[in-house]
Image (cartoon, rainbow, N blue to C red; front, side):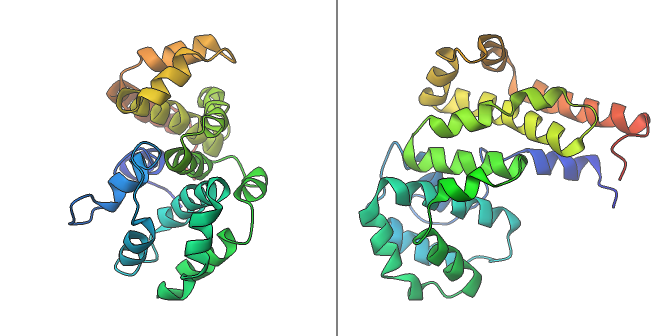
Amino acid sequence: MKKTIALLIVTILSFSNTLFSQNNERNFNQILQTYYIEKDNMLLEHSIDFFNNINPDNKNLKHIIIGFFGGLFIDSPEIKNDFKNNIEKFQNENIKNMFTSLTNENIKTFMSKYPISPSFNDMNWAAFFSTGKTEYLDLIFNNCSEAENRTDFNLFLTGASAKWSLCSNSKQHEKVKEYLESNTTNREMAQEILNSDVSELKSNIVTIIKEQREKGIWND
């Protein structure tokens, strides 16, 4: 199936962009992206309200739920138990099943078997936003080198989305910026990401995809 360039860009722009909107004092997207900084004492109530009033078929939803709540449940058994005791309040069966699995399984075991992909980056961003733990940034950063891949389209998108999202979030989250500044795993890559312009990275991704298609690559 052929994809348009516009759709491909939507694919690579991961969890660091606004995914949801909710008309309340602090929309759910803000809660998800700043929880590690500003805890939400009504997370359970807000989660029930949100998930009971959205389209449960949103494909991004699964990765965000797994990453955010999976990471949070490891860090906070008390919150995990609160969700476990209120599973029946989630109306959608798919959402209910996901929360049931997350309250009974360790997210790290699941993620260790998950294929490298842009969705894998999204899950790790979600886990970082819920916990503030840089071990999840490590997993994203480790994918950045795949941005040089010109054979495997999925790996290219994984690397490109890793670089783009780290760059974007380093402009918005001090902890991400500090992580890159102190990174010794690949200092050159970290500095490149820090010094990049978000819009230019996005434009470069589009250019690379177009060039590969002109060569007859990544057309399927």
